[in-house]
Length: 361
Image 1 (cartoon, helix red, strand yellow):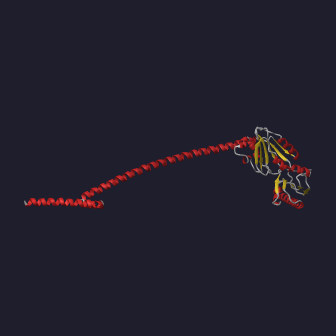
Image 2 (tube, helix red, strand yellow):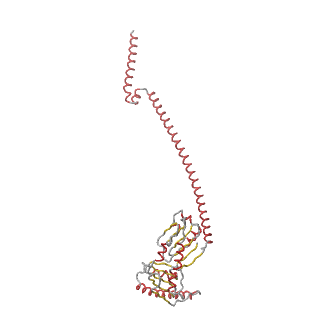
Image 3 (cartoon, helix red, strand yellow):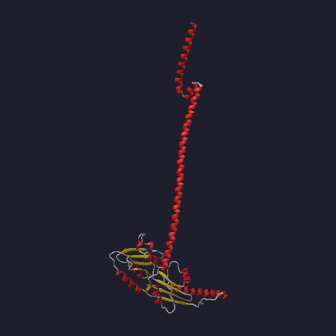
């Protein structure tokens, strides 16, 4: 009886202890996993830690696989990009070689064509002949509006004045011939799109502004106005030993004419010391002659102030020397016409200086 009662009390105590533990675990659940682990056995705590670590291993393994997948994709894209770049560079190099080859072939063809191309005609037009020529040009009329006029100042090419698409209206041969010309005063280009008229006029005075138009007639008025404008002009024709200075107050006749002569040795054809000494003496003669020219020129400029422009012709080196010594505010026009001073009058010099050059293309 006593044993039975003792066993009952022990069972009751165990039940009470379990209930108390349950209440404590429940109460401590809010305090976190650490508190719970503290209430459970060491084995259970270890099993929970192992489970947590295994879960972390699985999570990290999934992240690693995802990172490997992304890395493989990026490496594949990088390899493709390198391949595409190499292919693009290869194509670019091929196109560069092809472009260079075609450019070289085109330049060769142009040079060969230019060597064969020639002007249909070249002539010098006096002032009266130019007026008659322009009168004929004015008579041309075209209802199709296909008459092209281009004013090209010195150093200006056709392609720099007319729009990009318009040069196609003028054939390559004609443009090549125009590019050959580089006149000191520029030129005016008259062109019929049906090629009945194709020629350029080089005026005695510079073209001031570039312009172009295509209409039912040629634009003659600016050129006529330039040719009819009066200006005070100084003319210098420079040769070793014989030079000319002329002043024209209205571009019609010389009001002042001066012929300067000096003794200048002819060129020496022999070599050695004798030739060098002779050339030095000749250079001294030329320098003395130029001093006389500028002494006379100084008087002409003092007596005729207000010069509008200077037209120079003759020996190239003497022209360059004169350009250095002339006043800086004078407009200088260099004429390639090689005027010889022998048996030529001032009137003929003026007529030659003021003539136009006509090129048939």
